[in-house]
Length: 474
Image (cartoon, rainbow, N blue to C red):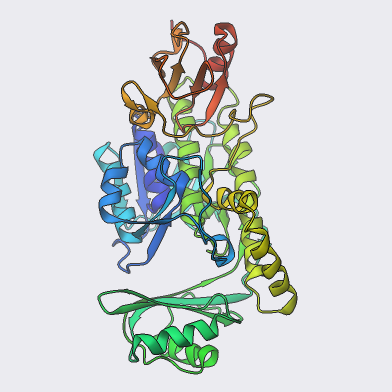
């Protein structure tokens, strides 16, 4: 019997498996597909996700395979530079091929002891007060204490739970792929510049190795889950641009819709949802993968605490309380961006106005922090603005703060050198460092890097240690 079964081994499922294994939880990941994703779509890790990779010691490996880009120009593709002084030591976007990041996260989980089984499709589930029974295609049954559905937008787990998925269905589609072209670069550049005056979603950019990344919108939806054909691209390019640019030799082709939906609940008893199983939205701003990874970091240590027996009574409930509003905000900003990309005169007038407003650094900063999740602040009650936010990677006498968070434990960073983690030292590390680059006496960090307490009073600290890390040992 496993402690946790995870349905789905995409970025969210693999990240969650690794987070659970940091605490010794027995994990089985079931992936329906028998082979890894083959097409080389580039995805972007935003600032907060890059920080999380640094917190687990993965960033150097990822940087070797990715490409840094400025953290600007993402909100509705309005071309504005990133504002200065973003609150992060990793204030950039990291572009990386999707198969590469999935493989890195999967191998990280395996190295920590997670079991990953391909060709395992969940078809049925039943839960009781002690655990969850999962049935696979073919009739095999498996048993675990908890089940987490990380199985994508068409989540079987969510459907079996009967959890509502309200929102808006797809109204339009976008074709995306990588292929070669048959016209000179200067012809492409001139054509794209003219088209983008009215069709903001259109893109045709060199990608390397002679290939181009093609993004072309389609009015309406096909209703097909199958990838588009090269002829579909040629037809739509001629409809939008008046030419198909001589596209040929595709590397991969895909389509996606603009459906926007949010699960009504993230937890039903011993079954939870994360990633696209819990929320979907248009890929405007590149937030989807990042939102799922951040779900996993929020859930992992809490579910591990539940399995290991030290979780406070309501700790697991904070997963939905914290992450559901974050997803709702992402869905809203995706809706807003979609409107700003619409060709109608009204949306374009608003777009021009917002483009002017983004010349004010405060406006630009606010929108970039929203897209990159730097601005996320969980509601931990009254206190300084830093309370509930993640703490940036600061200098400490041992080097960098995030290097101390590789094990997924809590951390008491103590500039007074007189505080103590006491009976919680099996779950919370303590660094007494009066030289730490911090302008408060002390902070208590959760395993996901969010600040759970600020101050210098031991009694108050003990209350917060109990709130987040349960009863002290012994």
